[in-house]
Amino acid sequence: MTESSQDSGRWQLTESSSADSEAIRALFHEVFGHEMTSPMWQWKYGEGRGHACLVWRDDQLVAHYGGLNRKIMLFGQPDEAVQIGDVMVKALERGTLSRKGPFMIAASGFIERYIGDGCRYALGYGFPTRRAMQAAVRQKLYAQVDSIVEHRWALQQSRPAIFSSATQLSINASAGTVKKIEATWQAMRGCFKHSVLGVRDWDYLVQRYLKHPLRQYQLFLICKRFTGKPLGVVVLQPEGRRSRLMDIVGDSADFPRLLGHAQKIACSAGAEELYGWITRSHAHLWNGTEEEQDVCVPSSVWQPGLSPEQVSNRWWLTFGDADFC
Image: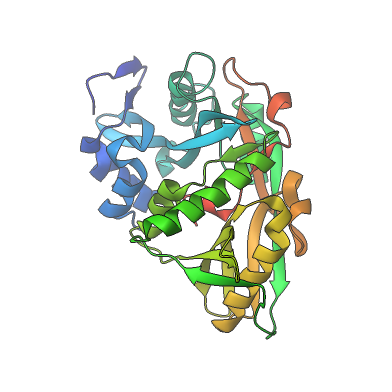
């Protein structure tokens, strides 16, 4: 535990540090049934990339409420948000769901430190189920501001694209390639000046995808074939007969062509279906078969800050914005 702990009756609240990683990973394994490796914890929380509030009882970690830094464009202006994740409470303590229980101590402690007026982050967001969302609304932690839908595309062999081409990207991309990637990000941010949009520049793509310690993603730069002008970037995660569309970067006017390339790439690798997540408010920008998911998008309301009305139906979120995909 860190020295900045404070009494909370029989529980003790602290801010996490690297010294707590072993206890956090042990609680993760107990709650979720699979391991969070040390490299995975480091990818999420190391080097200041994330924060967490911890609740202890008799020197035993019983609750964890984490958040990962996310640079955003907030209605066209640079800002920061925090993605809530790894919310977990030890099984023996879950019956204590009052406003003074370990979950509420961790959640309210985190929000008061990090989210809202006078804090580092303008917004907190996440991907809770409807049931979890309803519980948080009752506890006056969150308000729902959007929901997630899944788009699917059945794949079949088609002729290669004539007027554009796809180049797979690596962490060692040339300066010229990086310049083209940055141009696609600049085009995207220009299209979403009235939205809340996570930054998708080259540094982000490298850290989020190419440096992931466990998963293998495929990033492709799509350019016009004859001029070399960049159209956008698509990020895929192959899953055998299915392929997951993790992300798309570019001018929204070029989304149909970019989605078409994503389908061709997935099909050529043997997939029969491409699927991706998108916030319902922005789902009209994609053209797949749509299906509602049991996933909500919340906004923190525990303390003063941006109101739910200000950000309602403004978030652009995909699979790539979720650390668990």
